[in-house]
Picture 1 (spheres, helix red, strand yellow):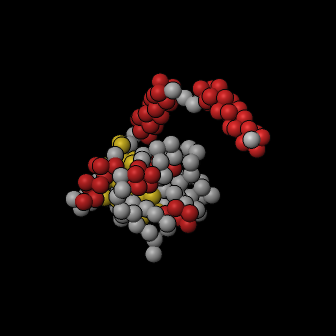
Picture 2 (cartoon, rainbow, N blue to C red; picture 1 turned 120 degrees about the vertical axis):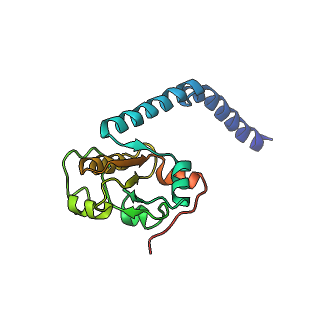
Picture 3 (spheres, helix red, strand yellow; picture 1 turned 90 degrees about the vertical axis):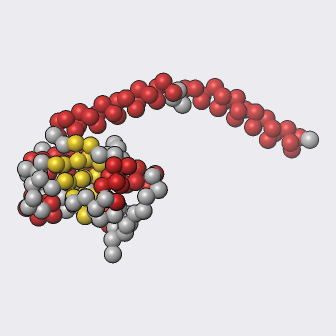
Length: 176
């Protein structure tokens, strides 16, 4: 009987402690809404500041399915991300997470602005879609800002990136 009493007491103590501390750790639905609002406002302000537009998962999938003429750029690291999974038809060009107001070869895997222009192509009116891993990842913001700085007119950031694409259960490609 004593062998059962000790684990039972430990379990009751754990339930008691968790029950008291859970409200202090977990956010309620209203606090979570404040977080969502802050993320949404940051995304909109980034887009306004960068001068680019936003595209969602469903719309990008429809563009791909319709064969829209566009360049899709994955801004994640080649080996760790792009090579493993990327949106179908995407090409890779690394951008950093922190803002990059000046071109920095250390942050773009040694690639130049000219390399980026070659990747995007000579048509400055072509649709350019730039993404990274997920909404809070700002690599895509940097890529979109630089596309605009270089004169591209129809630049879209796909903020949901790889996570949203996978979440929608759409097919991914792998680098060969």
